Length: 420
Image (cartoon, rainbow, N blue to C red; front, side):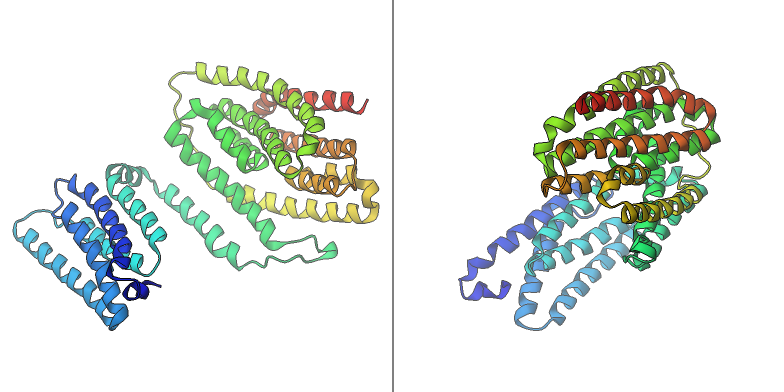
């Protein structure tokens, strides 16, 4: 407890003040660099120390003292504002807000939230330092961009939290929260890709595919298939992103398997590795083709959040979950491969984790586990190619089939060799 400083001697409270001093110096260092700022290192350091001192005294006397300290800092800022206004200069409201935050962080340190206070101090400094970049982003935001951000915020922070995270319906296969989470996921991948395009450009499509594969290769495929129909100039980038996302899935599954069940790796890695190597060769070719196109402009995107496509996919996802549960119920363990094919349509991780778990419990042999995981991957790739064919452009499907076929062929050949 902070109040124990009296029992352990006066110097027991010194670490709290040193932390506050560091916080004040960090924020003040940034403000010192700002020509228009009327507060720098010393002011911010003193305000942070004042916040901690006031909190300490308030704990021993009355909480109103802490509020009084804030009132004093506020009056000081008002006086500075009036003086600056008289001199016909900028009022520096950002610096005023930063000083108030600094006082609050100093008080938070005394109440034991030093880690949070340090994190907030770093965030505050970052916000102050990147003023030009943040202003540049806001100036580039169109009305459509702002609407997209608000739509995603509503989907994520208003609709998602109020949905029940419980299983309903036959076989308890329908979970509203999990289904809507897929809607949020697809919208998030779409919006993140839209932002990344403007930040890193088309030539770095492999980076977009890498992050897309880490989040959801299915969502990434759906998003970029839709965009290829909106703008033909998007096709080349979409090919690289989709193929890279598919390869990233294999890396992700290898890592998951290494964590959950390391003993399966000697049997599983050759299968995943064969698909990765053959798919990477084709993907590298299309990446080279993309990099040869110099001076590419960022394609126009009509709907960055893809809400309609995300909602439709959420519905399909729920239907597939139901049929997976139904098939598992009527077929039991004998229907493992059928369940792998069906559940793999939308989610490879589910069948992978469940198979690895059964293998660890000695309910599945290594051969059965590798086959189930491989079937889930192949099923997922088939589903994604269906998305490309029916939702994306014909050109996109034709160019993606080479990479997807190479990956699937590598997995299939290695699987046949493994079984034989």
